[in-house]
Image (tube, rainbow, N blue to C red):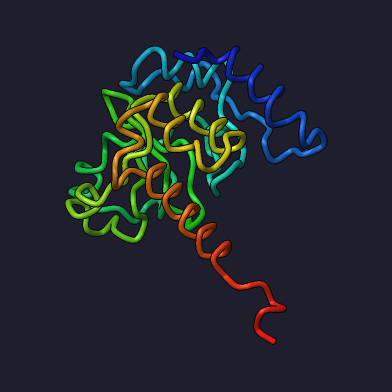
Length: 199
């Protein structure tokens, strides 16, 4: 499994070398004291302290929230407006980032799985749990998939993802559906007639 230091080296060699002046992919780490008060696997916490995750990266995911530590959903979204029951049901989710529509990327206690919750369903916490989108089994596997998303040829990306984290390549998982959507768009683009054939 990818260590924090190896992830940092790979990111620099494969991604940042192509855009050396970009600050968007700067790694955001958690302060060591943020590891207390959460029940997450040691490898996840060590990774986030040692290396961190990119401030923003493909496909429309960012981890800037890590700079503020590891916070619960009600500490990030609509603070002060939560009722006790949704707070209790969503308590095992620790926010580490967000995706393009503003929904949080979370780690689940105690197993450290990475999921996306729909921020529009926070008032319906049971439905929010049912409709959570699986991202990765662990933080190190998430980091490897981020590198694959940036560097792997699209036609090989699903197989690369499967070799990193088999569950992430299953239908309904974030990476599977994102790759399938890109392949569909590419196929649609390639099947279009060139403009001169319309005349």
